[in-house]
Image (cartoon, rainbow, N blue to C red):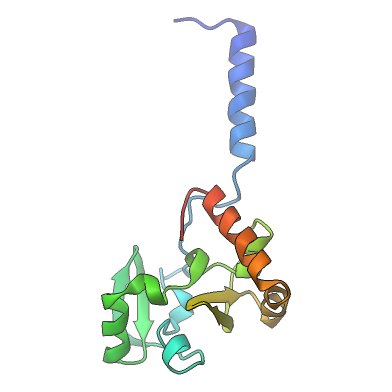
Length: 153
């Protein structure tokens, strides 16, 4: 089937508009480093059990969602393996403040908060301070933005 010039141009413009509307890196649904390590090696369970960030041990790890997750103890690894969605950070480990603004941004594992049993990370303490002002509204907006890139979390 041969398309006329006007129809080809329309299809090309429609494709370009669709691609331009996607967030940068929309295919990256989990924030990992160059070694495919989630949370820069921090233990996701420790945020809940110790109320602080703790660097995980490379010898105590698990692969989940095509990434390596490290833990500070075998107990934490077992807790994560039993219910990873409970401990994994929201928005694939991208900055919650950035996600509320519609962008995927890197995180500082030392900048975090737990809201309603869910871990949210920030790119800095400033991002967490930003999230704490109208937390519910910003989480709602971040959820909408996260869903718009084709995932739910």
